[in-house]
Length: 218
Ligand code: DX5
Ligand code: ZN
Image (cartoon, rainbow, N blue to C red; front, side):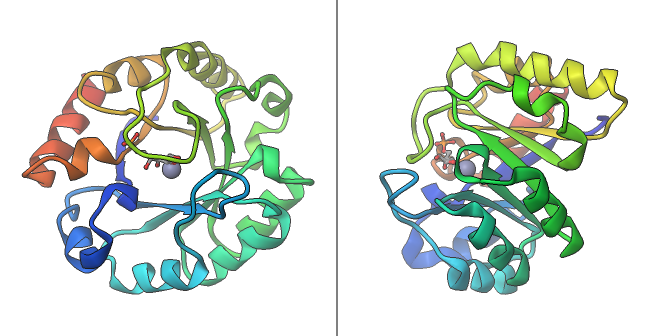
């Protein structure tokens, strides 16, 4: 892939001022929306109605990251409310390839996410069924955790398989991405970077996004 993408996560935004918080990240490529159901992860955030309102209000494409059970039934609803990409967890899907095909038929990019403990190998044979692979670099559920360097070999393994098969699948990393960690993730083969606390705790979000983009490209 010849370009890197920065996706700020609004999990770390001020929920009382979500419209303004979306405007602060207009220099980014997409807004990452963390959907949590308090079952798949021990935290609760937004549902499809909120995602629909974010789609309407956001100047950027919406990247929905579903940390919810029963992905097969739930994920298509997020395509229907206008998300541009919908990423479900492999651990929460009964028929991941069938679900990815259904999402693509609904004209959204289909992503599949892996918890840190989930191995990549079983996915490698079907990786072309997805537009994006999300390799979690923290245990999903909360912002502000530390990047798990142990995920770098998994990113490398995935990137190698994607290039060997001549596919154009994006590799997204999510969790603990900052100026300190983004270069390692990029070097391993990631090209889409989610950053929550690193961007929202900056005074100047646009400058932080630019700094991350430059480090990823270095
Ligand atoms: C964690 C979420 C992340 C989170 C990232 O479950 O999927 O998107 O908001 O936050 P930081 O960048 O602070 O680790
Ligand atoms: Zn996320």
